[in-house]
Image (cartoon, rainbow, N blue to C red; front, side, top):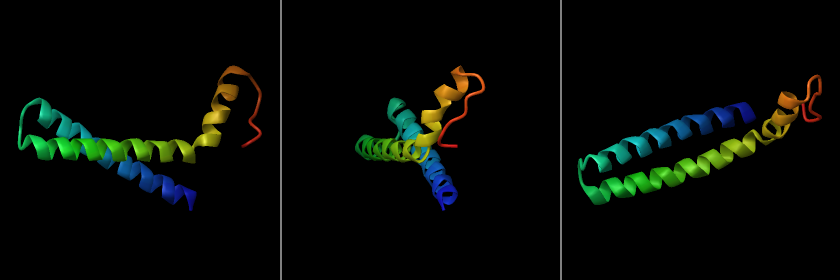
Length: 80
């Protein structure tokens, strides 16, 4: 279940990033309707932040263990 959820979160992170990046470049180059691009950029960026928070929450145990695994040789995480 968590693997599928993580996969879908990753897909939507990629989509939100692409929309945010392309709309940001379009705003920078003054392409298209400014208000529509600004709304698209703002909402996709907000979605991106929310999805990244979800992504970090899904990987929280991994993130807690990484410093221990990287800096203390031979030590294993309790959460493994």
